[in-house]
Amino acid sequence: MGHLAGVYVPADIYARYLRLKGEETLFVGGSDEHGIPITIRARKEGVTPQDIVDRYHELIKKSFEEFGISFDIYSRTTSDIHKKTASDMFLKIYENDGFQEIESEQYYDEEAGQFLADRYITGTCPHCSNQRAYGDQCEQCGTSLSPTDLINPKSALSGSIPVMRTTKHWYLPLNEHEAWLREWILTEHKEWKSNVYGQCKSWLDLGLQPRAVSRDLDWGIPVPLKDAEGKVLYVWFDAPIGYISNTKELLPNDWEKWWKD
Image (tube, rainbow, N blue to C red; front, side, top):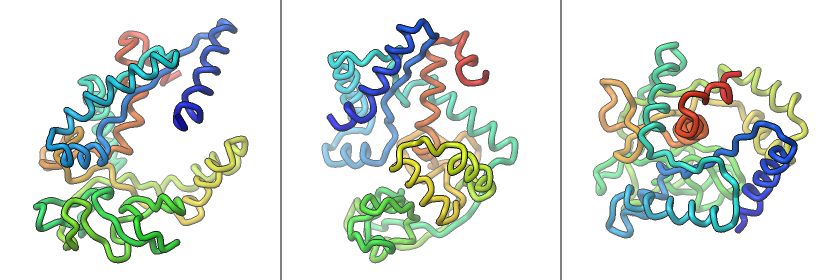
């Protein structure tokens, strides 16, 4: 109910208002289906991640319909059109030298026999001492983290203490874009809600760092490069592209005017 009241009802009211004014309006939503919680649930239930997302996508879509949320389209990130759109966007950035290719030491669970994505690692936050922080963020203080920032890390899969192994990933160099992002967010968008503005400001004040757009997993959109076996697009990169791919699904011959004009 919190998500419905906080996000979807206000967006639905605004979309209906624009339609009543006669303005051309497109209300797009969808299921984000490549997150780590999905694979964790699948492991617990002894089913595949696809089984999980198929079940919940239909439940969520039906719930929105019953509540009267007036999406023009509500699709999903496991659709073929989304996989192609996300892969094409990765390749476009890659071909324009927009990524950094970095080898690093990352946590590996020897009992589970796999590298650990950020949400597969828990530990103590170095900023607020929350003992249940994740490898990408502390949900108590909101600080963005790297898995190696955690104190006393352990695997969420086996409970064992992970070891470090070398792996290669592609990173978006956010530090190279910090100046214009700071100007655009802190100066040009002071009208944002205080909690949103404050969260963005805290990230900028700490200094933006390169952020991985790939990870070692078998669930997700495969990184579309020859030397990327066993690696998928990181969900934070993949999921927002869903708004574009869903528009393409709804308006295959007319989608660009919504995103390029």
